[in-house]
Image (cartoon, rainbow, N blue to C red; front, side):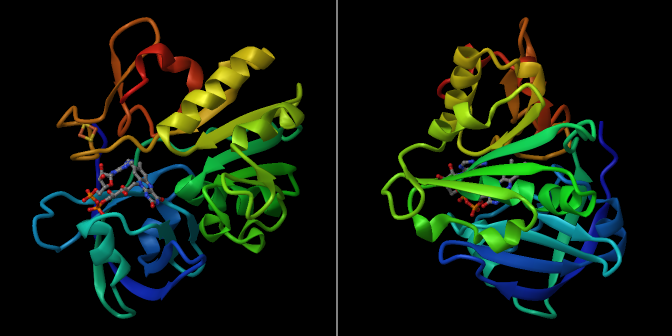
Length: 264
Ligand SMILES: Cc1cc2nc3c(=O)[nH]c(=O)nc-3n(C[C@H](O)[C@H](O)[C@H](O)COP(=O)(O)OP(=O)(O)OC[C@H]3O[C@@H](n4cnc5c(N)ncnc54)[C@H](O)[C@@H]3O)c2cc1C
Ligand code: FES
């Protein structure tokens, strides 16, 4: 079981990187040092009828300044409470939790495909690769341009966009951008709604791209976040289950049984 550390962070800034999301910047120096791209924290919320903490990907961390950023949309009581936190107020953090992304070899191009707020999981990964001078391509899909993280937040990456309504980039699903992006030197990363993950897996199979080279950041609804409630079980390839909070959230796609993932 993960040994999880409970910490008290302070809100430094709240902003709206795009119309449909909130970015909270928290100050907690030890957590900022410990946090790795792809991991998550359980954020304490104090709204009515919200017993459980809420899981959020580490969008980015700056260990020098002791800062951690989270980017999220408001979908219910917990995220509404978090989205209303103001500078100087405390937020309880449990983590960092789970396994982050495995680092691809230096000669590999990272292609990150994100649906909607799935992009939050990739901001730190892109920053880190930019610092090392490594090539990253981001395929960013959303229902409309209001939901797109501005490309300047992904500096250093080649950003290709798709929107369902055609308000920016390619009109249609982001998976349409995959065939042009998948080459022999690519490691693929994905994060987004289940429907998108399933579509990416289907495309990889059709294109003969091995699922061992696809890392998925799972955002399966969670309870405890630390391996005790079994609320985040997902079907594993070869039978049985893995726990998104402990075995993930980042796993290679070949470890999951995608034929049993539909509807989860
Ligand atoms: C590891 C992990 C990382 C995450 N990172 C982010 C992130 O960086 N940014 C972000 O915006 N969201 C992220 N999420 C989703 C986020 O945790 C939920 O949106 C949040 O818990 C909702 O809490 P709430 O109280 O506002 O809504 P609730 O009242 O709990 O739920 C409101 C609605 O959202 C749905 N919902 C709740 N959780 C999820 C989920 N995981 N996936 C899809 N639908 C869900 C519910 O079914 C319901 O319809 C992440 C989830 C996980 C497991
Ligand atoms: S969320 Fe409780 S076991 Fe994973």
